[in-house]
Image (cartoon, rainbow, N blue to C red; front, side, top):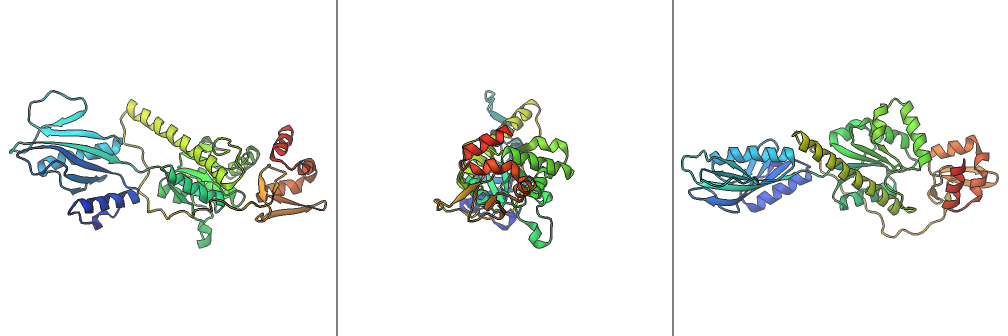
Length: 360
């Protein structure tokens, strides 16, 4: 965190600092004075920001009150819940909604503040350079998540995808949208990370094959409990935008389930707030065209996915016919036993393909 680079001397500087902390994914609390009885050195409306480490920016009163407010702010950050804090020696009826403290200052006075913690939204890391991956990144941000595309470290001589980088960034969720380009590597990296949930865009059949491949690579069996495949609910998606929409809907549902679980755990036994580590600012995702032109497609006879003929990378000539595949795994499966898929190739609708596969 680099908040100390901003010198806070007024409300405008405080707002700039708050925006910087949000961009960095930092934990902090905003403090606002809602009552000030003389003699005090502050006023109603005075504001400050308290970072997770206790560093305060702004002014809400003298040193006697500051130590109480800072500690209350840090507790708010850990719990993720706002609170009102009253610092006074005045006689008053107990209030369950107000945390009361005695005023330690010899001059007396009274001060009441409202503390609002700001906890960054969970981070979704999307694997893949596909249109679906970029669209998912855009949609995730629109529904309030932090999202970024996973970097391909192999271009710099490193591993294709790095689980350690996900953990360092504090990824809570991972979405595999590679769709045939590095599926196994991406899934392995995501499952080896500490992500709460890993969502895979794939058919049931392809997902099972990828799960077995990654299992043979030595991924801990317990981690497969975090795998959700196919990603999101079935919405009969066909286009990249529709596929991304279904996947992000799955992420949203899992996010709320996770937050409810954490909330129940904190209610049962108070503990530090479960939150992601501070991360670097995320570069904007590349938005897709809102209305891409329709293109010719063919049904992948192995997994039933629609394959854009113009951009297909995995192709086989069989019996005088060109067959297109979504990934290398499906292509290899077809070449191993092409006779199994002759009947599938004769059907040209997604529904017919799926019905044929269910009988196998």
